[in-house]
Image 1 (cartoon, one colour):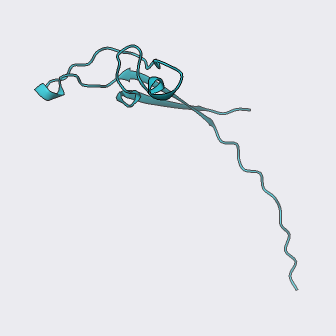
Image 2 (spheres, rainbow, N blue to C red):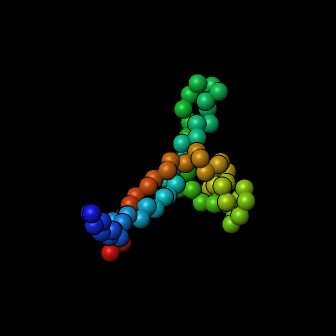
Image 3 (cartoon, rainbow, N blue to C red):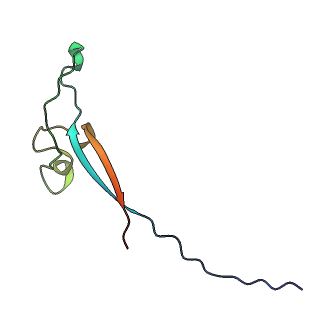
Length: 76
């Protein structure tokens, strides 16, 4: 008869990922076939909850129009 030994293995620590939304990529002249950006450099929410949290206070567009920047770092 074989003996089986079970060990608990701790998972490797995963890096913490932080997300920032940076410059606005909304093309305001898409209907005319041109490229015009407003120059908004970083997403700032208009409010704390609801739709206001997803609307930029600087340019007024939705958060999805801002470039998503993810960076990871390891916690010791």
